[in-house]
Length: 222
Image (cartoon, rainbow, N blue to C red):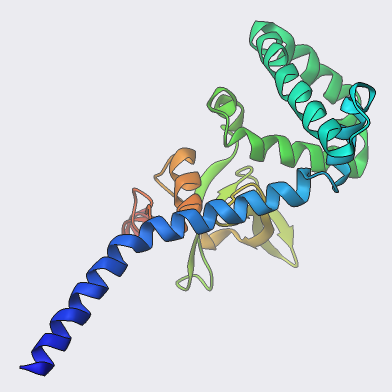
């Protein structure tokens, strides 16, 4: 009887834990993201000092200057957004093409960053048609990785055709690794870019529409 009572208590406790776990994990991820933002945009960061410099003429308190500067810059984003929607995006893109994109290393970095940011902006997804979701089967039939292919072109390396793929990071898919893998290992993934982002942001909890087995079956039939 005592054993059954203990099992019942333990089962009830586990049920409560499982009910609370998703909320706890969500808060943990949010806390981690907030920590990253604080380190990147906080008062002691380089960007934070820029915010403080904007608000410095209005107060001598450094923390208050940071808050005022941040508020002013946040408010300034709204008219900038209106200008972009009204057609400013084209001139900005042209300016970037004539400046940043012409600098060898910086141009490549800007182009990659612009593409990755476009994953979060539905209005830019038309510019991402060249970047298609793919499955990478390492070893030919090994580990399957959901990635993005910048193009369909192959690159000959040591007498073998390779393709460039971008493997995002989780849970923040803006970033990751650029890999050159044998072209035979890369198969089209019948998923949209939205699903790729959702899969990585959810750390795999949201699966792709096409399963690994379907992707491999489709590649064999092809």
